[in-house]
Amino acid sequence: MEGVSIRPARPEELPSLDALVLRSKSHWTGGRAEDVPAVTPELTAADITSRHATVAERGGVPVGFYTLNEHADYLGIGLFFVDRPCIGTGVGRLLWDDLVRRAVALGAHLLGVGAEPRAEGFYQRMGMVTRHDFEHNGERLIWMTADVGALPK
Image 1 (tube, rainbow, N blue to C red):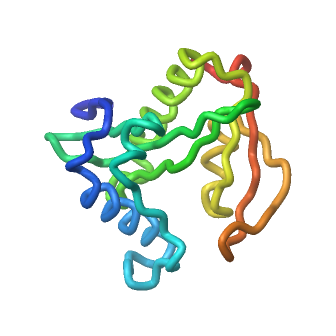
Image 2 (cartoon, one colour; image 1 turned 90 degrees about the vertical axis):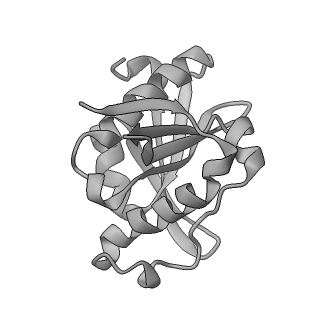
Image 3 (cartoon, rainbow, N blue to C red; image 1 turned 90 degrees about the horizontal axis):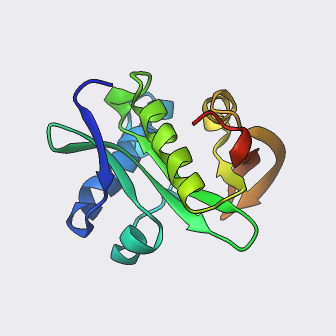
């Protein structure tokens, strides 16, 4: 994707990344950030390093990011968000490709995510398989997994 680069997130970006999450989630509420559910996650400075926080940026401005959670038996996608104006432009695919390369570099065999139902289609297109629904902090999520070795690199 032209003009977009991938790099590690920086702690001073926390407020802009939290705002990006709200804008991204507002995609499903007609662009109204005030209608985004209160369960919206917020990053901490510790998340930046411990969760492999990675940013896609254009012109020095973050347009998407992801975090990873290392577990004994799988690598979890903690957060994966693309800024609302960039949804459908290839930023998500660019971030996904980087995430898969990172998963391989970390030696992960299984990738897992508790996806919002509206993001299920994206994750399926990326090669993940729907397993079951579950509830977390009052929010319905969909557990999805993928064999890292079977994902396109």
